[in-house]
Amino acid sequence: MAELSKYVCSLDVGQEKLFRTKFNHRKWRKICIAAGLASLKFHDLRKTFCSLLAQNGVSTAVTQRLLEHSSPNLTNKVYTNVDPVLRDAVEQLPVGDWL
Image (cartoon, rainbow, N blue to C red; front, side):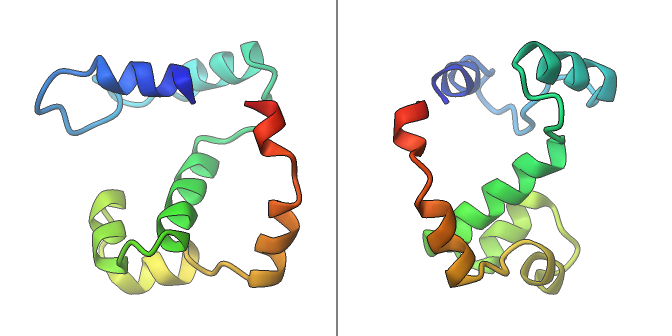
């Protein structure tokens, strides 16, 4: 998270996209393998981002715009279906120890 935060802070003022160039799947694969996260898909980051927004009370309309979805229904259907039992299970993970 510290590296991601540092990268985001280094972006040019007014830059709205995370990457300056078109997304490159091969480059992403190399990054993931180097980080020991070979099975991580870029889409997993979008799902996590959206779920965290929903859990923290961010409106579907705002989340829809951030993810550039065509409708709020898509955002709700695919990304914000956070099951409380599953969330409780995930919260049992010692994430703080990993960071």
